[in-house]
Image (cartoon, rainbow, N blue to C red; front, top):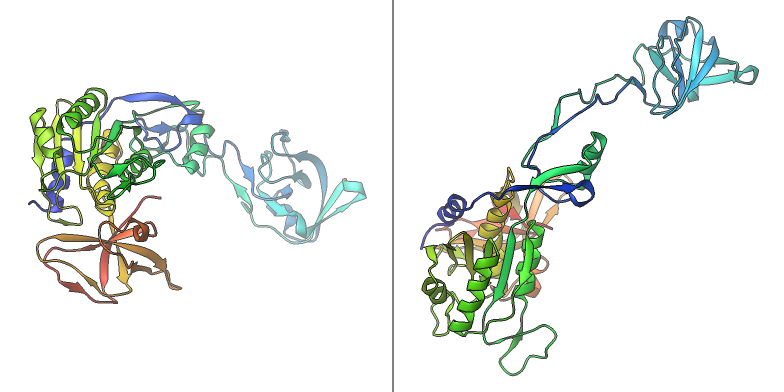
Length: 402
């Protein structure tokens, strides 16, 4: 039985990075950048007005109210591109280019038009530079605005589009095969018979893998037939970069998964982790395919996936940050740990009026209680050797991806 940190390191040491591919911008959301994104222009590309009003020379407004001659209008997408002189003003809209000769924008609320708009009265003086964003104040041509290894969020799409990236180079999605085992399982559209339950792990693991950026194939249920298991796992290993099984990795008479993996030539790196829940977790490799044998209980599946599988899938795509990142939170209720294993307990995160993150442990019936776990937004991490942590203590947490 090895520590969680050692198991994570073994996974990282044996996870290859996949090649990059180029995708259209419309398909780039959620992908991992495989190139630096470089600005091909200044931002803003010209001195830009921050509000509606009048472009003026600040010196002309010192003795306010001041009357200036309106010589033009600058609108977004249709600027006024002559030079403004002493005693003149240009009507200007938010986002429009500031004309040459102007060094400030006075907001429309402290101005008054006269003579049908031929003149404007500036009612208050304005300081030089007021309400103008200078050219390249935000980004200069040649700046790196997004870095390889970053995830492309909805907010990042605007950056890519603004600098002309109609297509973008990203890490290729890992091909993942998901296989649930156990004779007690039936498909979700079937009515369970006596001693049977519906399969949830296939769908849960597939959902988690999709959130991590993978392309997922769900394999048919394999039961506890060792020969059938080997056939399906061999097929997956030949067609996917990652095989994720659930169930059949404990020490029971019908737990055939680990034996089937070994018989088909899998190199097993570890098979037991000092983890609660999720001790009987298997990680290995067959040729170029990574294989994760997760426990069968749904909460154990979730915990072991986020600790071991998700980092591997993100690393394969070239993500800069792929390891589980812990934060601190204040514990709202007492929790119990164990001497022999590191515990990961489901919790709901709250934020108090002072902005402090609070972790509320969920009442749950153990690693099979998937209904309670559905409300979890994080895992509370209790170090190995800790029997109890009291309410009000700071604890480490691991956020669950939404």
